[in-house]
Length: 251
Image (cartoon, rainbow, N blue to C red; front, side, top):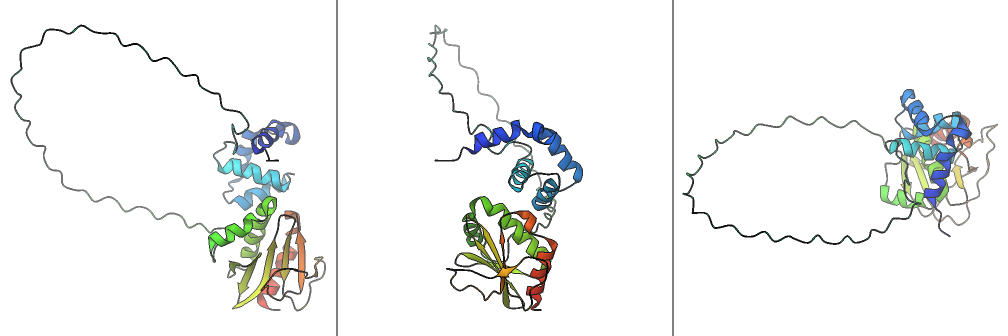
């Protein structure tokens, strides 16, 4: 059965005031007042206001869409238009032909304008994509396998890029590989059921809740020692990113 995203969005917006105390316009004004521009920053802020990750991501997409709902009108069937009768043309009696007018004198040629050099266009601001470095089409195709967990996967990648600015991301067979210092130090196994962030560590940091790496069916996966099974953005903690940076440094 196909999912009616238009109906889900309509219900989300209709109950937004009752559930959160603010209407859609009030939330969009609150986001604008925070001065947030990056999608992950907006989602993080909405999460701190009590939104679930999926609804925070949905509200961020509406904000990024200029305040317009993403699936506006998708659940409303189109009205079939009835064909309108063609108007009947009235016959206008012809008038007697007028005598021919003398030809007009040719207009003088327009003066030639000198070309004016266009001002140099300002360089667009530099925007750092959430996923770069590798084949973007291959990365995007792999993230599509995550389905409902795709926003979480994108968030994990963005946080790893913050923790390890020199990281290179590439798509492999069923997972994303993270590389630094000419070596793979982590991978993100992607599926519609869960995400598995696996790390290569000499010593497991205490208090993070990592478990031994289990990555069945991944061909060519880097040797990993520990992993975290991720299903919620709240699991992507500063302590986990410290472990990621530790794996990247090889310590």
